Amino acid sequence: MVFAADNQFFLRNIWYHAMPSRELKPGKTIAKTLLNEPILFGRTAQGEPFAIKDLCPHRAVPLSCGSFNGADVQCCYHGWRFGPTGKCLEIPSLMADQQMELSRFDVPHYQVQEVQGNLWIYMAESTTTAAPPPALEIPRVPGFADDVQPAMTYRMRFPCFIDHAVVGLMDPAHSPFVHRSWWWRGTQLNPEIKWFDPSPYGFTMRRHQMPDTMGRGYWLIGGVPQNEIIFYLPGVRTEEITTAKYRAVNLTTVTPLSDDETDVTFEFYWNIPWGFLLKPAMRYLIPEFLGQDRDVVAHQQVGLKHEPILRLIKDSDVLARWYYQLKAEYQRSQQEQREFVSPVKTQQLRWMA
Image 1: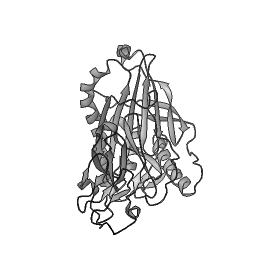
Image 2: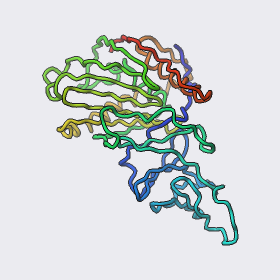
Image 3: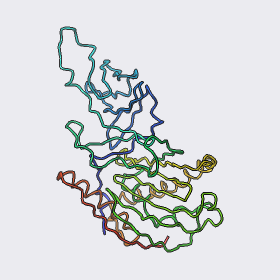
Image 4: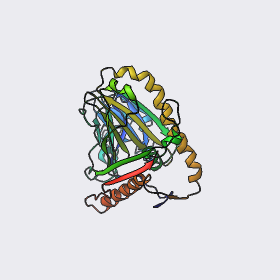
């Protein structure tokens, strides 16, 4: 398969990870750019999250430059006020007898949901017309309730378009070359043989027994674990490691900010009673590991400036091929207002890594 490096687009009418819930405090706002759109996130004094376009319709001043009293946002330029749904509440410069339909000046707002300690935002095709209902539910971390909080969270910014961050993170053959660390692995290549199945808006690496490379260390987590990896559009990955006693899940979300900046958020959920003992080491290991992925993607951007054709091979590039095919099919199904038809078929993949 060949892929033109400049053939890139953002998926719309789909949920994106916005931020960990704990970042957005009651009575506070946070300004972010997602998919090249300025968005103001806020949480009311009662704890309800919201998101509106970070742009006053009057003179285009960012609303984030104004104030928030826990109930509504006020622009710093002329004092126009807007509610959490974007409704224009007041234009102070109007005289009492100057009647005007304030709804003409409403600010576009976005659907948001909180699930498992994360804030998600529905990025519709247009904020000026009624958005179609979400076709894809917000992905869940398997084995944990919706009100659970992640045990650890780390975010890193990648200097690239979302596609290259997603493909780089899911790539199964790069570890021996990118992640060369004394604490991770050496350069020796070993055969990997895994079964993959289609799953809703993505694919699953079938649950399998992990190799006994930790030796006697496995007793710490209750025996040799099983592993399952699930990928969902637009860029969500869960990796679940389970034993008879414990479960640990890594949630990785990829969120595009602009054409050349993407946030990767790395979170852990576990039910291991002594898991807190792992945090000091993981606060060092996660940035180093994720930084290696970021650095190689930064190198890649040098070559992508020449708009090359990317040539993908079997079997190690099948996941990348599936990603591009899934993304294209989702966009077509939305444009044609029809059911999504997964291009993924059950398949055994073999590669050296």
